[in-house]
Image (cartoon, rainbow, N blue to C red):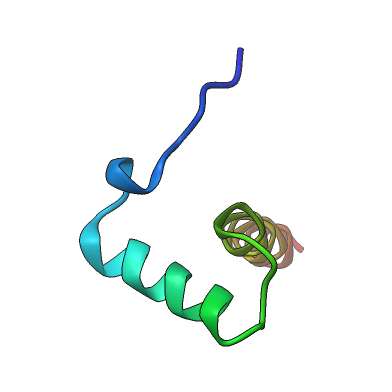
Length: 50
C-alpha cells in the first residue's frame, strides 16, 4: 500500500531542490520531480544491467 510522502518527510536539501524545480516551471508538482528522479534511477539501473 502506498503512503503519502510529504515535504516534511524529505531531507531539507531535497525538498528545497524539488520546490525550486517547481518554482522554475520545470515540473508541475513535487510529485512530478520525485517521479522523474525515480525514473532516472530505474533507467540507470537497467543500463547497468545491460
